[in-house]
Length: 559
Image 1 (spheres, one colour):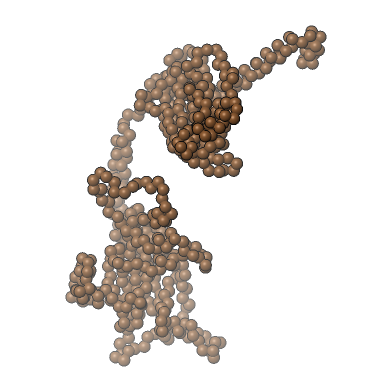
Image 2 (image 1 turned 180 degrees about the vertical axis):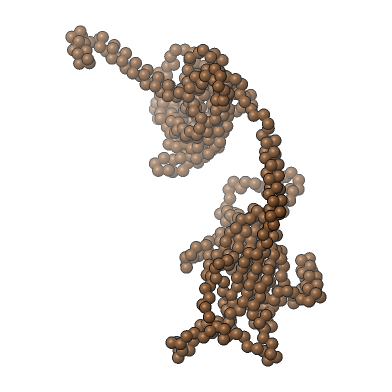
């Protein structure tokens, strides 16, 4: 007799199906091989002889001449959540006093109907559905790793005790919340008790009663053949997996008379007919079409466009973090300044914001406060004078970093500003900050104990204020100190008719956009050239103050 190749992979398999789970059909085949004593025992005198064919260990006829072959092998097709009663349940529910719940009385009525119609069709194979009060004890001792000395964690133990069921959505009675949504100071016990996943699932167990012949109906002989779990997303979990081309699974019973059983699990769900597949395809097409129409109705048919000659700037920003500051409990006050000429924003638009207070964490040599504070704004640029070659100004983002002490007193930690990126896309900007300081130790003591410090009345004084109309802005006498940095992440979008028009207006607007795009580069180049110009002017003044012979000698060296 050929040696049986057993399947030792009893892990679970995950499938996904769009078909209704009620169409699922499984064929389970269970067969008793022989007593395990014959498989493990061989006399020492026969070690060199061939093994005895397993066919010789077939069950012998009973005293009445009847061979219970129908009890040795069973095959049955089971549907999803199909209830097959075990012998234990048949004996239990025939007694009316054992029925306690409506489900028990329903099972009693079904069992009585089966008895009147000739008995149940199954013998050893039965099922526990999602409505039954059954818990697989193997789930309590399941391993999360392959380590032999694994110690289950608290979460594993809690998850093993959870039966994940469908949860009906019930409306809240009244408008007052029964419990707090946010627990500001959770205890360790609260975190441990609430760190449990509760995903609604439907569960079904396919069982087998492997008791001796004519001694069925005892709980100790029940064994799990297969466990199926299905969630609302169509994910089907099967443990163990369908047999397919693999060998059968084996079960070795315990006790005085050990027996060996093998079983297979096959998916025999009926295939859809061509007309059913076509009908299903039409249904899905109609469903997706209606869903697309629904989404279109939410967006609208008219796409919002800007006026001719205008540029719309939309920014999704985030205050990422701040680091390098002296004190803890930081928060950031920021706002966007639009140049008075050609720029505007909607009336409802808020161009400023304040982050939450955040404690710092050590990251290397610096202390970092992670805010992850989002903000959004939009602005419009309208270029009315087409012939003007002046470089347009771009919006500026100002920020002020402050800290809070134990008594809720604040200190200014730094001021900073950065020009918004002129190109669309994602940008990460790091803004260096500074703060004004006073001479002497009294000011620092006041800052530490009382919280008072020098502040700017106008935050736009960090750069050149928009209201300044003079030629030169003097900051002589202002003592400052470099502090930390603030990191912003900006996602910029630009919209304009000039991007899609091919007329002369596009060419004129394109020139404006080109100047806008190169604003930051031109600004930096202008600063460098201005610095060179000032250095050359100082050298010229120095040369004029030297004697004539040195000047000519210096000129020779220069040339």
